[in-house]
Length: 248
Image (tube, rainbow, N blue to C red; front, side):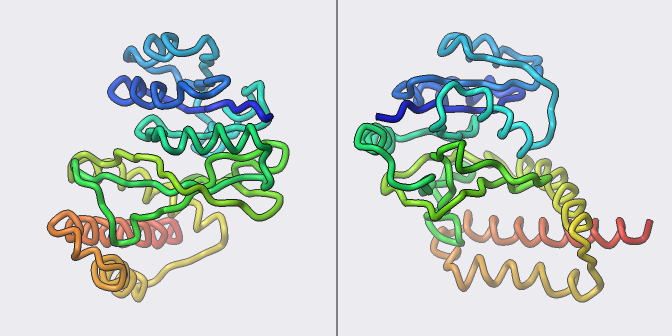
């Protein structure tokens, strides 16, 4: 039987963290790595666990990897503060760990919500992500943004989903898109990539067509249209910033 630690990183997440940690009550341990929140996030976390740490921010992948290292158990489940582990997924995890995992890690589907609406198309579902893994055989790859776990071996898949309550407004998306597009541009530059006028002219349109038409985002109504447009804007911003970095 494998014990499981649920780990989460936080910074001013008083709005979300209680529900996230409540959904992790099945775990053998809950570990929180906070980046010196100025709200009551830490106080809420201490209602659920005494394994609450505070360290300076080291980037998304670095912070999550550090949280994984702070866990007492080798099997970890990583969630974000705006995510929830459904009862069905919690039961799957318990049965899996009782029987003994046969893979180094497992992908979980996510049901993503945008402005209060569950999005089922446009590439937003099933949105598989490796969340349950043996830290001896997996770790977060060093990246500025879009952090992900690299496994030593092929992952398995879980049936029941997580819930993800992402952007709650257009303003929320735009604020975070500015930060994420900067990080993405810096990451691409670090990889030696460059951009030109054709990237600005074509890539945003390709993003829109892929999300709204090819991946049937139109079936999500106005929410699908908004997302396709917002992701096109993000794509433009990312490549525009990459061009500007190259001019320096």
